[in-house]
Length: 355
Ligand SMILES: Nc1ncnc2c1ncn2[C@@H]1O[C@H](COP(=O)(O)OP(=O)(O)OP(=O)(O)O)[C@@H](O)[C@H]1O
Ligand SMILES: N[C@@H](CCO)C(=O)O
Image (cartoon, rainbow, N blue to C red; front, side):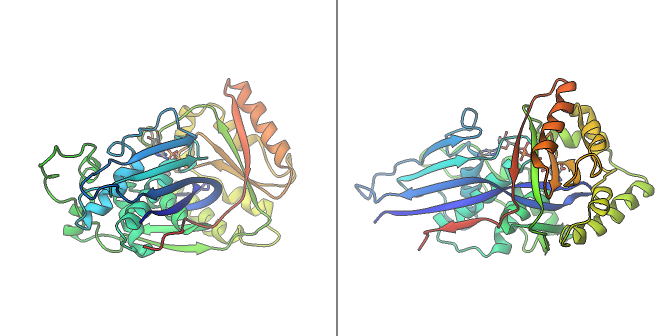
């Protein structure tokens, strides 16, 4: 008997200014997997997975199930449950609206989609907290994956792990997600590390429905790894307190109706990551300082989205003039951008899976 189902995971913006590695927001661009497992023509014939990929990243994403991030994560989940291979005659059509390497959570979405895929393929029915554990074994900061899974405006932290769990969680990704299948008759080698239970914890904040997100997306990629390399390993107390004060206010201010632009604009400022990332993103300091609620009615606040280079402007109106003026500032620095008006949406869904 054939089986088919769909997995849909939203884009995310992490940090929202002061909440570095802490808060995330799910946004209305999606990675969608349409999955079909056809009944094998003969029980002994094992057909390898076939992947078709359309949309953002289609020209660079690997279509080999042992190299593709989403399917490697799915196989990791299956192997942790004693299932050593993909089902036969598995076909996946991935359609992606989330641009790669722009700070809109493309890798977090691919990882969450992979965990949900593994759970569905194995009939595992993993509870949401366990899905998060698996996702956090692969993507080690919780802000994007938690928001992609749960949806809305979310704050999260990683539980402090005991020594054994710390060791399990610190296994290199190359071991968690090996790229190559074993040759026929061989084994994968040692069992993959099981995620410790309850790695990530989160809380959902309120969100004023009048607030939309303008994503101003430079036409170049910046990997999260590169954007983390430029960050210092320690901070002054003054800078930490600056961010904590703003984050505490921001988490409630974005739920108020009507939202208060003066409060939010100041509460979206950051001293922990954006100042260090300006060398990688020409125009970042100018865009975040020259555009204010006074110069742009409707604007509430402006920040780097995730690790960048996208800029996220939260606003209740005036979306086009905010985007076009940001475009003009970027153009002065030689950077071309595209922009999208996005809404805050719900989290990941799996539809049509009766297994
Ligand atoms: N749908 C996908 N399928 C397979 N691989 C993907 C997919 N989406 C992202 N990736 C991989 O993740 C990489 C981008 O990850 P990276 O963490 O650098 O950026 P990001 O997730 O887009 O940004 P941020 O984490 O700042 O929001 C891509 O270059 C690609 O290798
Ligand atoms: N909090 C992370 C998000 C990137 O995915 C960072 O800013 O590096």
